[in-house]
Length: 206
Image 1 (cartoon, helix red, strand yellow):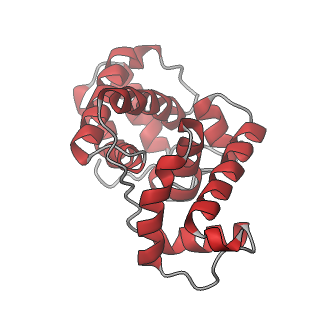
Image 2: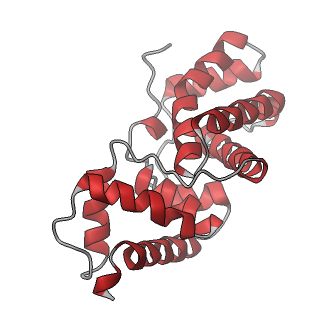
């Protein structure tokens, strides 16, 4: 089972209308719904690393992100019997996980830290492409340091959209379904987050 790799963990997310999970993941979900503990454990192993990553990128400590992940899977275990077959499991799971992360953020003191390991170069390119005011040759390490300081100035909705779209590289349609908002709203929050970060990171260009 450890060899199964659902699409949400591979970086690029499926486009609208595409299958969200591999058939093996769908089979695991159905077995977990039937009460098979081994199948549920396999689902946890498939998704827990990404959920912890989202929690850390949202500003939680590693321990708090782990707690949020555990809380999310407790809820998944409790309610998986209600999950409707044929729907996207990862969207359902991520919606639960994001609420668990928000709850943990309310209970915890923010650490003003964002882990973007492995994403610095990609995000540097993305931010440069988003506006002509960005420095053309910003170094990845410098960008990481500035992002850690700047993301704390985003609203909660801007932050989660930025994390899911720019750091986790999810499609706009999937984010909209997870957050239960329109794609227009997702794009608006994304544009606002990028603008605030550009102004914070490179104020001399404004």
